[in-house]
Image 1 (cartoon, one colour):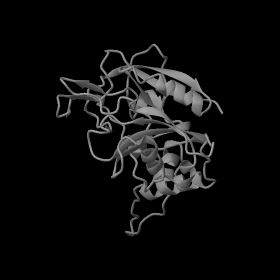
Image 2 (cartoon, rainbow, N blue to C red; image 1 turned 180 degrees about the horizontal axis):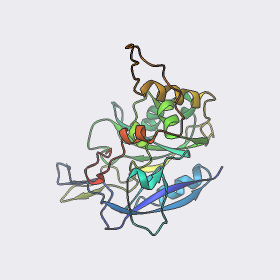
Image 3 (cartoon, rainbow, N blue to C red; image 1 turned 60 degrees about the vertical axis):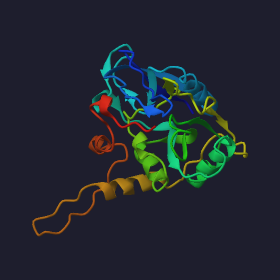
Image 4 (tube, rainbow, N blue to C red; image 1 turned 120 degrees about the vertical axis):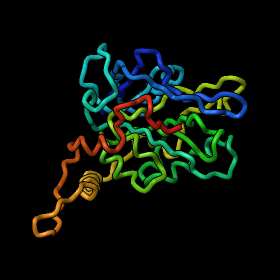
Length: 269
């Protein structure tokens, strides 16, 4: 069960982190830069995934994407679809944002248990690495990144089908979408409301691998087929929906979040 994590490093030392300034926690401009070097870190289970991701918390010029680099590690590349291929992954990061919560904001276990309950049943009994998002404690609700190890590699399309209807950000399941991994920064009197914002969440069942539903691939194909535009024949009737290959159709992926101008990108807080 081997896999890799794609780590991008900004070659101009732009910081790929969210920053806040002053006692009012004003969000500062997010500008991750235009060119990156991409490298691969090998992983094989949840523990090794946690080690790689945890090691990036103090690396503000680095982040993670799901795509597979098409160029050598030492070559400067733009974070664009032609430079990274879509690939299935044994891992996923799930971004839960502004989930309503009226409990104790310092009770990490209770918040994480509630957040995991919003996910499909397969995730609810599995352990994960968690990292509270940059604006956790600044904006309302639970805001957390949850990293899971999957039973088998799943494509972006499969992840979207699996998590469809859950309160998560599906934009992450795109080969070039930034996964923030560094801790946020605070300046001009702002202090971090969550100085210990990451760790391992143990769901209580000693399960570290998320089982993948047997019908997930067919659900992904069905979802892609429903979202594919249908043309009309000369008679005016709609042509039958074609079956779409789960690992093809880069144009769909591009429309669902790949941004040719990363400095203007909306990256979840």
